[in-house]
Image (tube, rainbow, N blue to C red; front, side, top):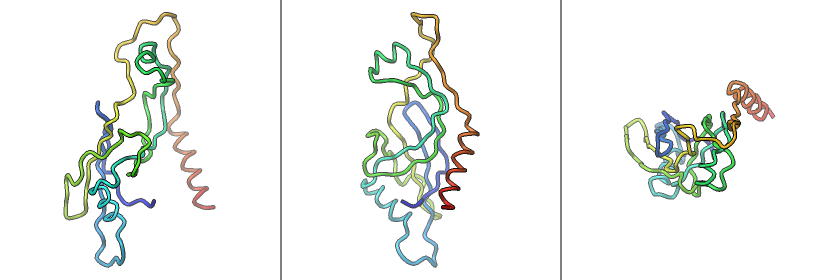
Length: 161
């Protein structure tokens, strides 16, 4: 679907990811259905109540034995990521990625809505756990600038094609 809103800010906290989205008002001279009004109406009516969240992992590590005990299917822990986009959807891949508040912060210049992803963040170890072997878990770090420049190049190539 085409873009229909603007992210004003995002911030993570212990309960998930918060974002404020602005839907621009319909210009007086515009004729026809205004996509931001249509999408906001679907969100307000709880037809679109989930989120698709796109991100690039920037830092990944192996889970600790305690994390594997708590989450048996856990293979990697993302400790840093770069948020690329979020979109409202009818059925989110993560069933806990849901709209929390609609219509908060209304203004005459357009609709705003604050959202929260209620999924618990990836487990984070605050204090190092004792390790049975002397080797620390592997940590992979990625060059954000290189990833961003390659992503922009690929987007431009697709746009020109």
